[in-house]
Image (cartoon, rainbow, N blue to C red):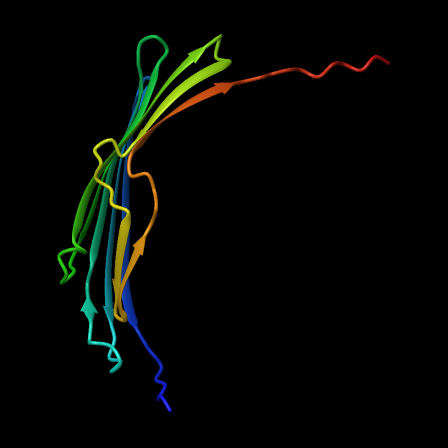
Length: 164
């Protein structure tokens, strides 16, 4: 018979967000910084004693710019930083740049948009998480970086008025 023991993990966390926005005419710029500090501990004898204090920092800069020829550029640059892990594979720094270029035609009824995701190719399809019970690795099948073309047609048809 296997002895069963309750697994208890003590977790302490601190989460803080700072946001700043600035608008100049039709252009806008914003900055957002998020800090997440966590501490995981356990004394369960079935696991190797793990005491982890990871720090996750996310800093993002977002811009919306009106360009000539009625074009609009919406872009964001985000720096993801994870540190504080004993295993160096868990300490990561990823710089992710996304952008969207939009151009209206036919008096705004037709929109052409081009999206670019992870233009620098920094993201990985493996997510590693550690808590006091151990490490979890998740593999995700995704396109790490891509471009996507959108064609949007706005059909605004007014209903016919009823004849009385």
